[in-house]
Length: 138
Image 1 (cartoon, rainbow, N blue to C red):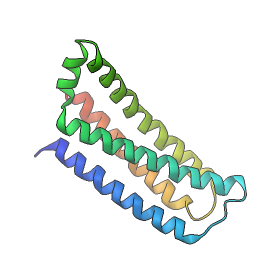
Image 2 (image 1 turned 90 degrees about the horizontal axis):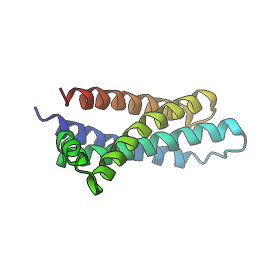
Image 3 (image 1 turned 60 degrees about the vertical axis):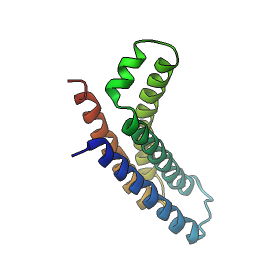
């Protein structure tokens, strides 16, 4: 079983499904007049950004395994920059999904439920990727 390939496919499927969610939300024609409606819309924006970043990281990890990235980062230079960028982007997906979940809980309107569901899905994928990344070095 090729775990990086499976992760890349699941992240790609998530990106396609969240695009469908955006299609549904934008067709509703909601007006985001008060702060609670804006919070639910922003929650979906944050979850979408996290999905896109996770998909990019999954593709990068598919073609450049973490062990190779770690070994190259010890040499310094541009490899170290790429390794740090990967790490901080990875942690950003966890923070974005948690912020999206908090905003979905505070928000109101049509995007609230899909935003909450997507924030939970993205955080779950972040946690799975975190466990696999930590275990890949042992």
